[in-house]
Image (cartoon, rainbow, N blue to C red; front, side, top):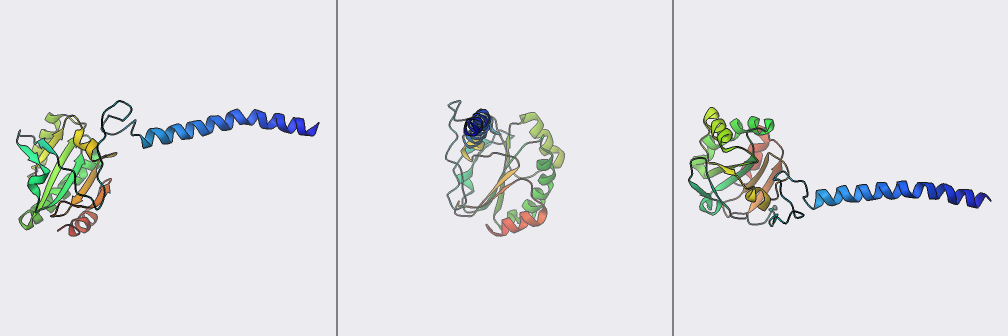
Length: 190
């Protein structure tokens, strides 16, 4: 008789346990499959998410228009150390990072360092106003369709890719950097 009541007790817990397992598996699937991404597209929607960009691989080339309508192509910067920064004007940590980036650019641009700031999920007018407000001198582009953010598999902003003079990604920073961290990462590509 005791075996039957034990079996019944287990039978009551099985649906709950299965429910928890299903929820955990579903959340893992959604995160892994980029169903909800910063860039707003997904494999589930049929929108290609690109090859991604990892340390040690050649940075995927891209072309975007800057805020003045000029074409920016990553491959045109070959031979320079490049910081590719994905950001948005509405992102507080991104806004805090921009003056540090401008200072680094002013100190190192004559030594072969370039910055490509790529605004994602942002309004072109807001980006242009922000650039003018801070008097940023490095190139800034707006990734209107988020294809570059998807190509690099950017999941959070700010995210910065540090690309050496040969076009190889040497470091990736997800989240904001302070000046010390930025200079340390720049030293790896300069």
